Length: 71
Image 1 (cartoon, rainbow, N blue to C red):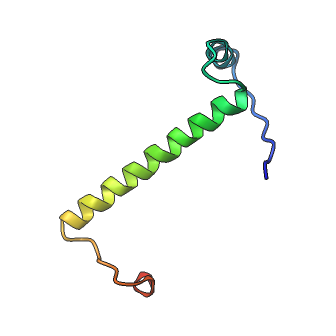
Image 2 (cartoon, rainbow, N blue to C red):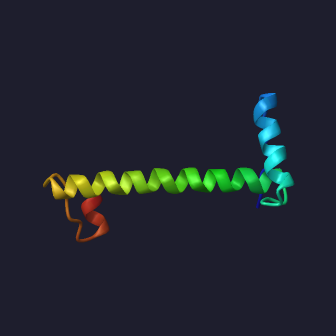
């Protein structure tokens, strides 16, 4: 299922999107923005994982043996 989301962009950003689409890299504006969102999500998740690794390395992490340990 999809949900339509409308966004407003400053002229300069809109020109960048149009220019990028003309390269053939993306078929639609939606595809362009979906790709950007995925990149953002992946970057955020990787950052959180890296922070968790640092906590575990510093001895501040907790090893979970089951989902019950999340409480």
